[in-house]
Length: 224
Length: 167
Image 1 (cartoon, rainbow over the protein chains, first blue to last red):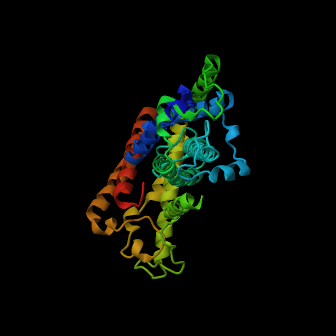
Image 2: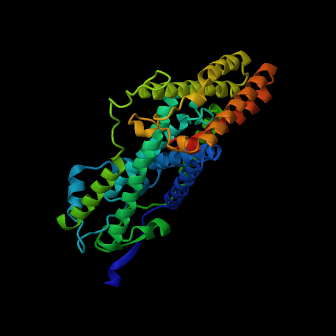
Image 3: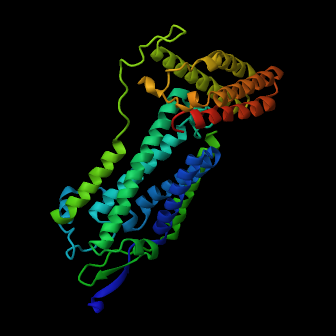
């Protein structure tokens, strides 16, 4: 059996760096909000937004497995994939599975909703606010702050689902999803077709990096 | 498929239900009792909520103005006057029976009536901060105004941390 298994690179290093930075940022954002360190929360939010901007840009110009548009689920492919979710029958697809792609889109959407409401949220004391809180009324800023909290709950549910899914794949479907997100490498059976290259094109990488840096700079420059 | 997806879907729906379940809805007829000051419990609770919203609105106006490149002291002065008006008599906004047990939707915690001495201290801390802010506004010195506004915010927060739900 072992001679049938070869290694193939599935996640480029920038996607992996993005993923683990995201984990750190989500924890840091939660912690600073919980502690009421709003100045830190606000500055970390800028970093968070530029991280998400990078992901969006990389989702447009990055390697195949980083692209976001192909993740929009096609119902037939999704149903076909769901039917393979049985122990011993599940074959790991190259890149995101139809279900995993759906999870990525849900998580990224919730994160964007969270960052955008945060930019305008106003705290109950009328003292701290997001970078653009001064553009809207206190009442609207408070409503957005409430929405910001609701979206956090949604995000928490999505993250728990993400962890449950990873555990289920690992324990029941015998598919290790964590390893490839660290090393970038997954094993595949020879019979499966090799996926396209996930080589990082440096010019494209810098283009995405500059765009995300520019977004951060624009917020600090235009916001208060 | 069913073997795996049924438990997964079960866990999913449990999580969703757990995340969506809010508190029980407030009784629309609650709070009709008349207080010693002649107001109903409901009217008292809503009046103080309106008061805090006016305070928040005007304090935000002050802070927004301070963040502009050329803050206008008259704008700050107007907002401060409105803030002082909205804050007057705050210590009397909490008669017995206007807490969560009234059934009216309120974020006021029972701790207000359990520790009235500390609650009163927190209100006078806030009032003292407002007096400081008024004095700074009278000098017209923007740096002093900014420092006084910075000192006022935490007196709101100190009370909210202990006596108000959430945040």
